[in-house]
Image (cartoon, rainbow, N blue to C red; front, side, top):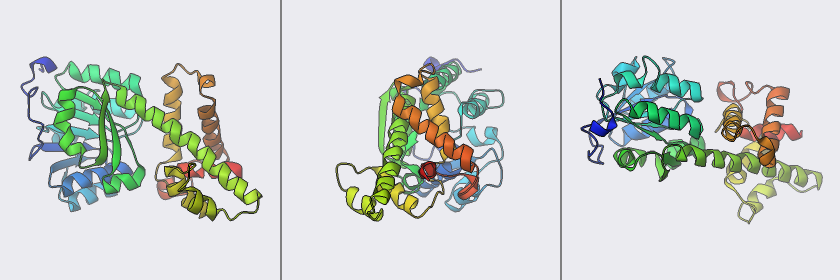
Length: 313
């Protein structure tokens, strides 16, 4: 039985990961690329996925990692455990429910979750794992599939400094901008702010392209010329070209953005009127899902957030 984090023999451990075992749970679109980068960096990576046989498992093995069939085998003796899952329920099931990481990870293990689950859930998980002698970092990311493949993600971390320093060498193999943003929940809070920026910015990208079309200007100039100006943005530079090609394959799935915007309002007690721009973005994303099927089009049956353009057609 764990005696709590205060008594962990790992509390004063080195901030070097070295040959220590790293577990990575969740080998989907983002998780696959991030786990592969860890393995390519020469780290001892062991993966696990809820659904066996997915491409992510084969990719990790090809990069020099291993894949186990159970959570227990993946996390036992792991110094650092990363998870990249889905919604709040998924993360809680894998981390703190019976048969999850909490039952098998060693005392003092650092568990960092890359999912977007909101600050309230992050604090609950932090408290639950701390009681079992484990550290928890909420570490949501931004940068999309491109950033995951290139190891250039921004990783926003909430939690204890000791845990952050222990995980940092591995985090830096996956992200270019890795910041400890405050105590538990701080990473999630900042990620929700980021999702507002992304969601509302997608309105401006779609409306700028719509205006150019109505005024008889080649829409390509919106991307080619304005990306370098004061109105430029990551979304315009990276998703604008996809919109112009009617390419709605997901870098970040629309259904995940809808989940994140739901979390925004849940974490402020549902008061959507205080964020009118975010509320409008949520309505437009929902319209695309309802009118065109959020489970159709694009890889794995999911559209990317650039599909907001369809709400203007």
